[in-house]
Amino acid sequence: MADRSNRTIGLCNSDKCTGCECCYNICPTNSIVMTFNQYGESFPKINMNTCIQCGKCMKYCHVLCDCEKNESYKCFAAVRKDKNKRENCSSGGISSLLAEKVIGRDGVFYGVVFSRTDGAVYKRITSVEEIHETEGSKYVQASIGNVFNDIKQDLINKLEVLFIGSACQCAGLKMFLNGENICTDKLLLVDFLCHGIVPKSFLDDEIAYLEDKHNFVCDEISFRSNDSKKNYYLSLYNKKRIIYKRKAELQPYFYCFLKSISLRENCLSCKYKNINRVSDITIGDFIGLERNSINDLPSNCNPSLILINTEKGCDVFKKIEGMLYWERNVKEAVKGGPSLRGCVMPDKKRERFRELYIEYGFTYAARKVANKDIVVNYMVYLRYSILRYFKAIIKRLLFRINKNS
Image 1 (cartoon, rainbow, N blue to C red):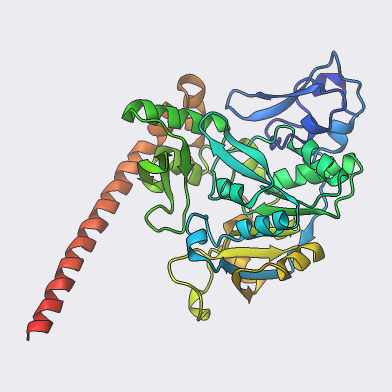
Image 2: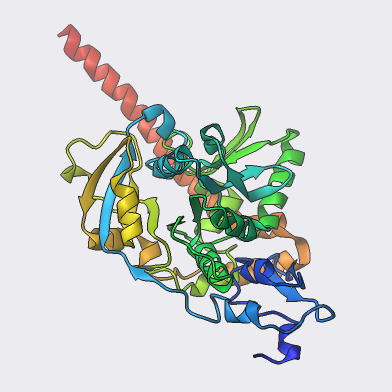
């Protein structure tokens, strides 16, 4: 057991902590609170006045102790058959199908929803009508809160449970349930391929800045969609109407995320970016898919990558209805998927961003480090748009000439 002085400043080194909140949920005396460091990253801290030094928080920390993993042994590209239901999803819409299957058997689904007041938070979902709230990527850290204890109670009550989260959140849940000696036969654990996690306060600050600058109120957000006009755009909505939309490479928050400038420190040394997974099923975009080798793949959609990691995951996958799927080689997924090949190196502007963040906050820091590249990206985008415009005009003129000749 670590000494008391170490435990007052964190359970594991703060630069390795993922903020999974396992220790927060497992503490028998509620002596752990989640706090924030100078970079806005959440991490646990112990109240030594109430701590009984049982050691559970350290014994079941997935950073300090290895979580059980399984090597992916089957790989599929998949899309939901229903085009309308697929359109608002990040990729093939498979996560919604999984949720519908579990809820259809009187189970519960834990997924991430977004609201302007609470940000990205986990929600316990028991009806099919609520599933749409979880659709779409949310490039920010989701708060766990007491969800691990809620899942524990659901499993004690013999309910089927689906949890979808990042690999580190899935690892935290596995370690928590192990520490509580809970049977996980009815738990389906699904992780999504993760580029990295951005502190909650960054997105809060960005939205507040845009609301103030453009004089609107946001109640919904999206980063990804199967609609090409919304895919890789930061889109803000009010009552289902788009009130702000910027391409990823032209938007400071999105730019800093993709360049790994604004990620949590632990994401730069993540131990889950490989083919050994902590979940039953791994889902994500199938980057690098050889689309030409699939004859019946629907056009204008982003196929989901599905990695099968356990027999439980395989059994569930076989019983999913309402999807088209094609078996692929795991090596194809690894070749095209950077999140399966190791951590990406952050942009050299990261250190400058963190210095500016401490002094001036997120919106200033992000724009200071991103604006030069955004201007260059805008000029490239403008040139491309002009060329595409004139090519379309020429194509129409040639068509008319040929038609009249």
